[in-house]
Length: 211
Image (cartoon, rainbow, N blue to C red; front, top):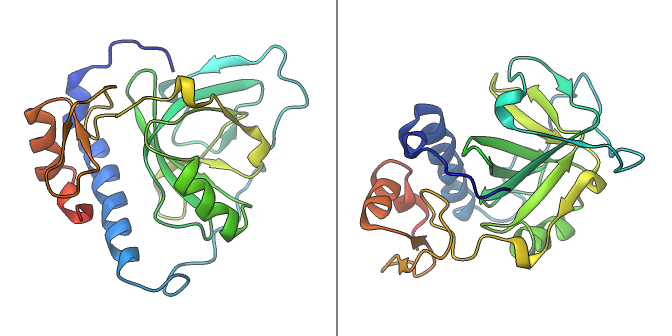
């Protein structure tokens, strides 16, 4: 993800707020139940199937705003570069992340076909806050809840850029790197300013997962 200036106005976008708040509600709910219980283990079969390209040669970059959220479509020959903005609360039926692209646009990402034991390890050590990755042949689709998302069926289409490219100490509100303030309660959420911390608590629902 290129370090372009992302508009501050995106932070109060209603859809962004809804995605983050709903994601954190799910994290809070799944903390209250035993692993494997009360978790949906089925999904609606997609119209299309996403897989990795045979070759990386000639792949073109694409951003979320260049993809049609209302149309099921696999963007063959394209690569979507993103950072992980929110980690997954589940591994079945898919790993569920929030991702942000170079423009600061946010979207849901569902990764299928990962065995649960491996999925939990990936969530803990690999699919972490600020991790940078590229999605080859990204599949934008309308999901069962009638909201758009990126779907991955072939995990080999995920290219991890490695620790040197990840966003260190990412602000949990705006995504800024090297955020020096830390939540006094959970000691894990980083913030670049008091304004971001307040917004994250009041609007994005950090209080739901702060422990």
